Length: 266
Length: 266
DNA sequence: TAGAAATTAAAGGTTTGACCAGTTGTGGTG
DNA sequence: CACCACAACTGGTCAAACCTTTAATTTCTA
Image (cartoon, rainbow over all chains, first blue to last red; front, side, top):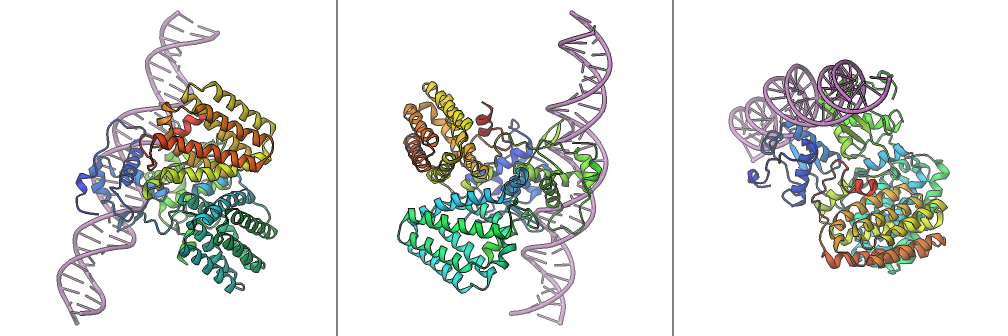
């Protein structure tokens, strides 16, 4: 970010839609949309920015926290407020969906069905579009899965990474984000039961079927293989952990440090 | 909500994960998850609640606005703060997705593809599960579409409602929410071009094909019909409005009063 | 008596100002 | 040249006050 901030942040208009804080959020969103703020950029200090926008600091903070709540901004005490960097695939915060699950009592099987639909579509697209590099990355993850048959935690990591590779190969970042949203929640419950998992070999086999269909550029087969894989995975999981709603439990996900971090940082 | 609030809101623990405001949000989310707060409930006044939780009012407000930003709470001046009611189908705020679209420059066609995947899956499920009432509702919307062939705005309303009926019939509220998220954004750009729409009769025809496949309990046909419908709709739209990223534009959606309201309130 | 209008209490929204607690970068010191 | 301490800076929190909007109450009128 250059030092020519003064020209970019203009005061809010008096005639606005909702509250002042909402207007701030809209203003900041607009700047992001127009590319005046880009991922990784640091916003001016709150005190300065508040003056530029013509509002008080608490009001500005309310607007900022709205954007922080949806994962667009991130504030670090003493450092500043930054536009969140899109590390790898852009991701939507799973918090709202998790919240909705709590409010309406979504069952685990309903989530699994959603994931199944999303991943089948993704697998089909991946079979049409995957590049050589992407297919190589998938193959590598499967190799790692076979190598981790007696290390369930490691296996699970490669499992998830394979699915992310497929999603990336689909070329559709929106579907990828939605899948991650759902998968993250299911992952939270799965990682507690994975220690007792025993059908890892079969699971690896199923993944290989998906991979081969993608490699063969056969969308229908990729969809079928993905469906079979997820159906079996669901059954295996439900046999250990009977039907229940997704738990918020120990992963408040308030700052994005929970499961998503686990998935990406390993 | 009864008058026994004092027992339900307990002060936050000193040793917390992140900031105090985040802890407030986590606390409130927990109460929602455990059912201590239910949709439609009104929270205690901010001043009282702040005292109960042992934090200052600005801090409490920061936590509340975080939850408001993701569509869980809603504050009305003079009235109070309420847990958002799930009117009909629960809905996820499209703001975050819209934001992500801005940040990463998603194209309209990428969104359309995501919608296509979601709606095909939904149509397939609806063909398996739709009840008589739900099918009747679909048929009614199609009738209205035929009756509105020379009123594009009205036609668009019934168009969207038909898709929501199908989604409801799918029985999967997560897929429904995800579809609404994507469809809402596409709707915002579509409603600007709909005035010049001319292929409404063909569109109604396509909807009828989807309906008939669902009525005949033929998932594969329903998926195909939905795909054909959306492919043509996309082409029709792109012919009028060439490829571009989804616009944030005049629909801040900061308070949910924009397109979603249009869809539901008419 | 019933309805409508004015009043009042209560709620969220905003502002000012101050202080605290971390981070960062710089400058001095070994 | 490396290391450490200090000072400036930044976000986080708190407090008290005032404004605007809403909703309920009261009061006045038909």
